[in-house]
Length: 600
Image 1 (tube, one colour):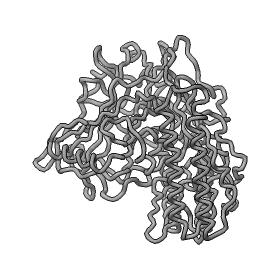
Image 2 (cartoon, rainbow, N blue to C red):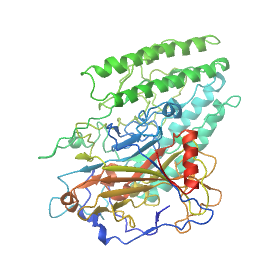
Image 3 (cartoon, one colour):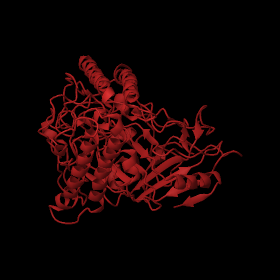
Image 4 (cartoon, one colour):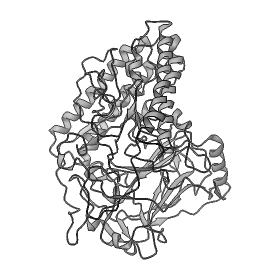
């Protein structure tokens, strides 16, 4: 496993509604010192490499969702990702729906691999100046956004409904208090303030509250894990519909900018049935859970069809071939849910109003539902099912007097170039994507658990600090060095990003509250895993681009990023959800432990 022992100095960039990265954020690769250390494989180590071919996103699956780090928040990344592998994945995906998906990987691997796109912005750095990389600009007060819990719950037993609602109200109150702290602070972009005063304490409170909800919902060994919903984020308002930057509400167009052939990949958005159900009698819990899971799978199948039928039919194709059949399936499933509850309790009325779905990336108020309650979802800030009509529907099952302030829904990528506020220009398709599962220098590897979630790098090193950020930029032929700046490559060399994921696992958890604590990076010098962690196949994703040297030298290629990062190259990151079958993972482990090089 190769790791960076020492990188170049981090580029300090901050928010100004997505300024281009300055020319000082670019460096000739020859000026970057060799800094990649590859620990020597010992007698007990594993030196094999298993390579998977999942293509270069030829299907054109682009999305501003991040289902790993921001589950349930549509367009939550505020920048566009390239997706390879799993074809159905979206913000609201479940493990079960991922497992049923088709894939772009040749060996049938249904895992999802995704990373921010690279664009060419011909208006960046016009000749002489460029914004200063050292000046921290005013960001505004910012606000806290958290994944929706209500719409991710399983069927809630009758006896637990009141307790669950009280805890949902506590989640809402926790977010309200955090937003109060944000508004009162004079420097909300300070990483120490964001981490230590806002996100850290809020995460701890949410973990405790989510544990109480899971305990209340659990019954006779019924497993409920809400850990992935604990982590919240701070947003600085850019990119919201109706926000204070109306002059940038539409993508900017540049003279002479080439037309892209890519179209946005819409996803299905349906009203949340979970938040509309009453308490479910014990006798019906298993049946209702099966039907709720079926609703999730139906949405996933529809999302997959949107990708695989791209360009087919006329303007009404999605309505007639995807949304129409989905409506029929949901009507039947909702009817079975009502019947199951009605056998042992009062039958819920009107569930059919939650059957109709729409496309969820058209901008503005998505999936407006007149039945949506005035009570917002706990802490979802308008991005999930919290009273914007996005995903809720009527909920007459408690909820109290929650009054979390709403924020407008986040903008969707628009136009032929899938642009968002600050993230403009033509997307560069990768020339090559290499996905490798690698060994460990000191020990044999053990299988990754199915549905393991991992992130590498940090999308917000400016507002959250650089502790988790990683240098990723290099040029083909110079893989012995990685830079935290954009690189300028010599003629004939490709711009390259190398994303190494953690190769050590705690042996128990497929995810953690901050999406990081369940995995660790091996020691950079010895390659050994920390005590209490075991080696797993270490994932490396290498992405190569054909970008003209003229564009590189002018500083006109840039990474999609959160607005406050201003395309900071140090904000590069990558996400992974393991949906390899047990059989495929066993092949990976054997190949790596045998010291072979395998391709599938």
